Image (tube, rainbow, N blue to C red; front, side):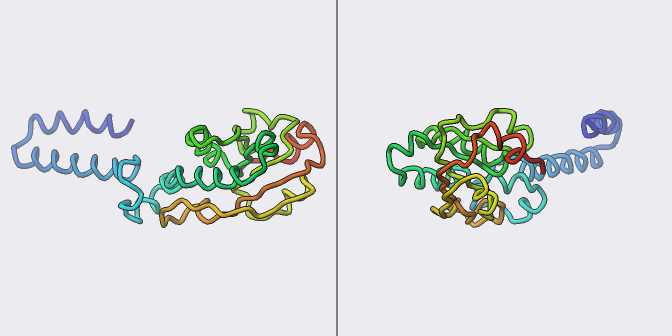
Length: 194
């Protein structure tokens, strides 16, 4: 909004000013536009993305490698016995991970995704028959062990891009044997903020 308001003033000034300052203003506007596009939008391939872009825009780093993220989960899912695949859901630690699975999971045959993070929790808990969970974005398994009788490290996230974000090389857990119904633990234990 401030850029738009400033643009009105700058355009008025440029229409009355001398030619050289007008050209300088136009050049500065072009440089700012290009730099903002590179920093704020995902327009470059991840392997060509300058490191400062991830440092300047944390969310840009969190959206890199989503296809690889989904591929990592699909490899774990394919490794489950068929009967367990049919009862499985994916539980993510945050809404960004849930977004990656929602976007790229269906093409990879992944089961539904749930997350207790922020407003993602309002999209619903896993169905009661979902007693096999592929959990990702949860570094320490202690919390999972309070919900399941069996928690096994099944793989690691490989986003196929060298990016320092919260997901790359994170653990993927397979959890079985739900200790209590989802209805009992979803709002009080799984749902979280931050």
